[in-house]
Amino acid sequence: MRRPTNQHMTEKVIVIGAGMAGIMAARTLHDAGLDVTVLEARERIGGRTHTDHSLGGSVDLGAAWIHGIDGNPLTPLAQKLGVEYGYTDFLNRSVTAVQAYDEDGTPLDQAEYALGQQHALAGWYLAAGSILYAAPTSVKSLQDWLDFGLPKPEGLSFSAEKGYLYQSLISTEYVCAADAHEIDWQLNEQQVGLTGGDYLLHGGGYSVISDHLAEGLDIRTGHAVTQVTVTEDGVTVTTSSPTDVAKKEEIACSRVVVSVPLGVLKSGAITFEPPLPDAKCGAIERIGFGNYEKLAMRFDKFYWPREAQRFNYMSTGDLSLFHAWLNIGYYTGEPILVSYHAGKRARHLNQLSDGDLIERTVAVMQRMFGGDIPAPLNYARTRWQHDPFSQGSYSFDQIGQQSGDRNALAQPVENRLFFAGEATHPHFHSTVHGAYETGVRAAREILQQL
Ligand SMILES: Cc1cc2nc3c(=O)[nH]c(=O)nc-3n(C[C@H](O)[C@H](O)[C@H](O)COP(=O)(O)OP(=O)(O)OC[C@H]3O[C@@H](n4cnc5c(N)ncnc54)[C@H](O)[C@@H]3O)c2cc1C
Image (cartoon, rainbow, N blue to C red):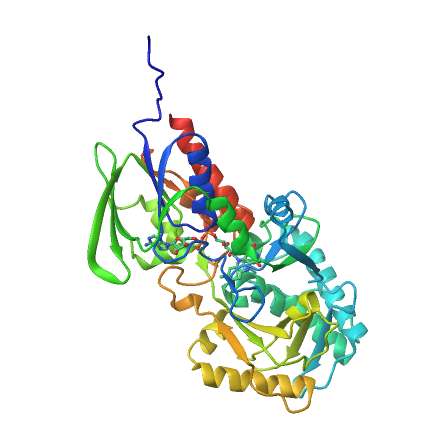
């Protein structure tokens, strides 16, 4: 009798990184019958999806929203797993989603502020058309575009001006996790957004989805990869333990999926032998990797209007801070508030001690919401910038980047090394669903070789 043959038997795949991309690469390969092991540096999986439970509710310290619910692979998963989610009106079309405040704490007129936001959105739509025809080639960055002259009606009220400023500049800096002069606006416009609106996961959070997708996979945490060597016969992956650098391991395999963040590739923490091709190294250098940090705080009660989803504090000056706040309580009824910072603002606040950051945050809350607000009962603060296994938040289209760079980053090397991770997605980068798709794509590239 002939024994059944399995052409996959000699295939051993190592996936580096157990974020959404790595988990989906491993999931796809495992389900296709391959021998696959995931090496993860941290003691937890999920990467930049990380749900915190220390504040007495689930708060996502990395990704928090499903950006575009239609056709998003995460939507049916959240539904199936019973993760609750609620709509966030980022464009403030409802007028009531955002309460904004002037620098001295005076509440701005909600309707006028929303009107200013809508004028800025309309301005961007018009600019998107004119960039193809009218703009000089020197107009490249988001800042150039604002300086060049985004269409804006005359005679806006004070509150509408602030809404215009928020929507034309500040919100894009937050979305890109970068500063206006760094963002290549034309490349940024090639990013595709899914429709259906943005939904905040709050009951359970993103970790429920990552954990579910990782079920049954061979994932070894505490294994930081330091070297990847392509040999004639396959690939050797060297790891060290983040807690005991002397503890090294070498694992041989036939193929590797590299799904570490772009920030880690930029840092050179992993040595590739032979070195990666020039086109890929150039892409690693040129694609931007931004900064975005959160401070989530739990208070004894609501000191802020419960019915607004978000607050904007319109501070001014080159290093104006505390623009963006999310009222988790709007969704959950728990008195939890999150303050966000991006780009240079995030890097600036990362230099503050916890005590200083809390003190400054509460002072701004007092200005906006009035009254005597005590320090939070508890808080969770991110420092993605200084985390050796992320080295920043997510990729953005940076001035100097070339249009083919994300594809170059995604290209396999000698059919041995395959690349996944949000930054490798041509149009869904910087998102969890983008990372998810790149994991599946890298796994399929391997399966096509077999
Ligand atoms: C603050 C913040 C807010 C965000 N908000 C949203 C949002 O609301 N919605 C959204 O869709 N997206 C959001 N994102 C982006 C989203 O989180 C990412 O695009 C996505 O999670 C990236 O997945 P990934 O698998 O590519 O990378 P990661 O999740 O970073 O996974 C890479 C893995 O590699 C591991 N690793 C690193 N170095 C090594 C090494 N040397 N050896 C072994 N393992 C290593 C890491 O520990 C990590 O687990 C946000 C990100 C941040 C930081």
